[in-house]
Amino acid sequence: MALDISDVKRLAVLAQLELTGTQAEQTLDKLNGIFALVERMRAVDTTGVTPLNHPIAELRPELALRLRDDVVTEPNRREAYQACAPATQDGLYLVPKVID
Image 1 (cartoon, rainbow, N blue to C red):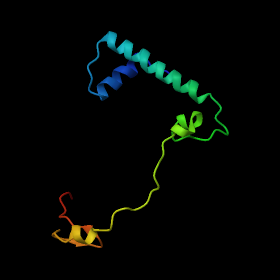
Image 2 (image 1 turned 30 degrees about the horizontal axis):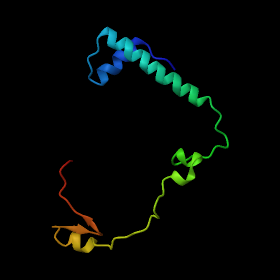
Image 3 (image 1 turned 45 degrees about the vertical axis):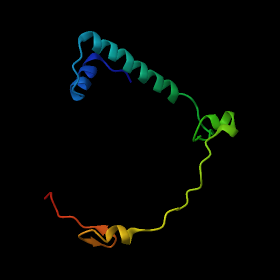
Image 4 (image 1 turned 180 degrees about the vertical axis):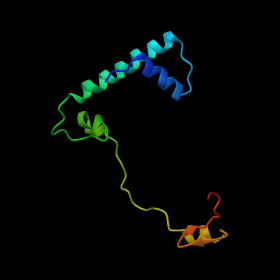
């Protein structure tokens, strides 16, 4: 996929940017470079490659992010938090309708 100068100008209008002709050409070159890189990356066969949560884990496992177990550490205080609310129902805060 390659963009042309009219695409860049349209994107500039959508992003509310004012680009000169030179800036539009430079942006066109940069965007086409990004798209070319994405196409090169898509061409790589990744069949059988397991995704990593952090690339350093493959090279040096001892430096991989050590994530803690996902466990609840705080008590449920919903009742106490909702005690001062003007209106609640089924554990949810009730608010007046402001948009029709």
